[in-house]
Image (cartoon, rainbow, N blue to C red; front, side, top):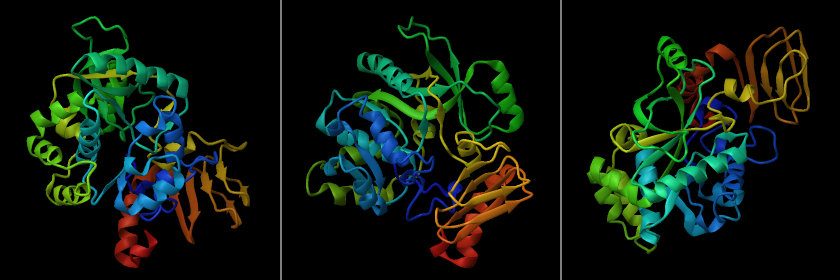
Length: 352
């Protein structure tokens, strides 16, 4: 899934060139390229599909030259993850009714790739032989209020992989008190938003829980000249809804696999800071010409041709991109979306 805007990474991430197309970690590969590379360890490139917004068609093909052009699915509108996953699932189902699928965002960090590959393959064994929907869960390390949480129970049947548990409840972004309780209880995991299932199982789930959407996407003439027009018609009318809310929270055959894969959704500058190298004062600096004085615990990202001098800041975000500068307290990073809305209203779309 590669259609998001990544507004919490403004001004680095902009509507025309969002976060998944940026080398945000300074590795020499953008996030979508790193994700594509990771999945080559799981399946051949012919079996990788990318769903993105129509506006990013050229960007995807430029950054992923090995992607088959017919495996690039372009959405005419942003309608959240349920239509996005339905589009890909029904397209794959039309080509191979016995397909096994893994669904993943294009802009996440997975540091332990070998462990990730083992986790996915273990889930594939279950999804291939059973009618089930599996999500990867991450053991929480702090009471984070920005993540969804999954509560698990021991499965009634004996699992071959003891890390796979039956899901009891989903909770979306709890307050701090609740997040602390989840952390202490020991039976909650972060929802990584990475799903494994068979094409048959997800199609069956849509038929049961989102019958109108199921009918719409099953009516598309996939792999024909009519496909694009059919998709435009469906997206003009279909619900804007997440797959978590519409399907996973309501289905009774959902499982979670606890996985230590070095995961981060890289959703905020704070999460990015945790994965960058620090100097002696715990500043994470990206940029060749940055001079820091009496500053601690800052994240600074400056383009190569700019020189920046920072003095006397502690726990700040300092980011420059395309002649826009953001200076913001790390603790206030959730307000960046508000800043973006204000910029759009007061200064115009060209800055976002």
